[in-house]
Length: 108
Image (cartoon, rainbow, N blue to C red; front, side, top):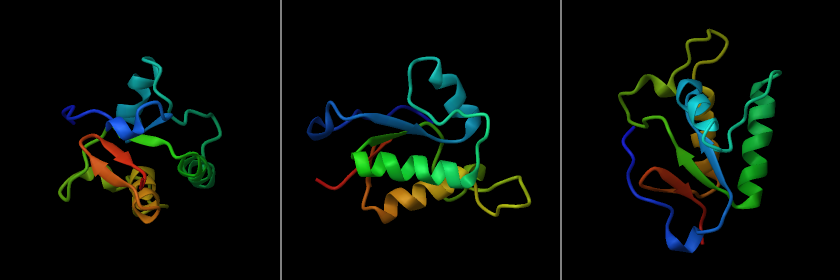
């Protein structure tokens, strides 16, 4: 995903949570990005983590491509039809977040 834009001034200083597919989030953790990296990951833990960040008013940085024709929204695990990334996006859109470049920002 190409970098586009920056956090809007109105959200400057907010905690930034980084989301995307594991292959893209793991490398950015080394740069200090806030990601969920736990040994006992589960869909419920992931959901709780996202909900805490929403309640906190975090800005979310997207590090994986989001488009209608991308495989980033699908899951290779037969237990789940969509990826954790797709579930995260759904939760954020349901909470009223909007996209600004490579970021999802909460309602003012």
